[in-house]
Length: 319
Image (tube, rainbow, N blue to C red):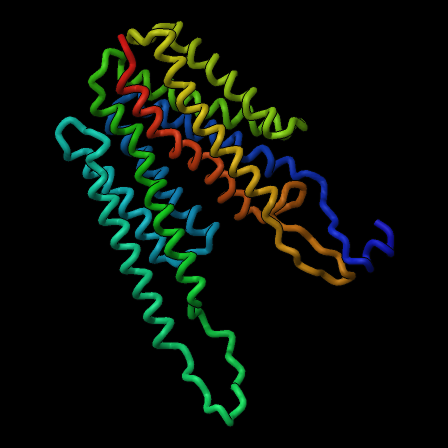
């Protein structure tokens, strides 16, 4: 870069970070592989994996959106309560967690109201009109009103995502259709893993996301059909294709949104010399902690969002 570029304050993207780009494909394969293995073993094993994923999601979601520890605890706690409610309900229907979700929303709202009240009580009183306004200190850890609103959004969305993950558990535990429940869950998880991994690897190879995503969906559908063609425990080819496609379509769209969000997020930090470094955008190196949270979210969020459709399709698959 020339000295003129340094003095003009231009944006200087770095070369793509290979490790960061490959973190999400590796994470989704690992996470989905754990869930697939657990679903093949038993319902309780899948419940353990789902609980671990919910805890990881609560941590990564709160860390990425910079939420308080209280919000993290609320997200994780209500996700686990959803698993417990599902396990204690006869027949294990997915709507058993509706009440848990409702109380979780109420808990988040009450918690944020408490934070807002704390902000109001700690705010400095207004100075007299004749006196100059004293400088407001950088407030040691006191959240602003905007921060409280962001915490509210983080808590509500996190609880929803955590409870969505229980869809795989509900399908595995209470499925009453003609197709084997464990195999349907595996096919759905397979579709999610393949579409995210292939889509991300295609983007890493230079394909634009709108092209890499559909290619991943086609590969995911083919993988589901192939899995069904093997006829494990009586799973049909159509059922394997349908479950994998249900997971792939939803997860592919969510992953595309995550990619767009990552590429569009930038923090303009002006460093000595006038160079603006764009953090969080594609083509820049990021701290290892950011890579870990990004990989977790890139793997678990599509998995969670795909769960309801996989559950719905799995419950209505013909014999």
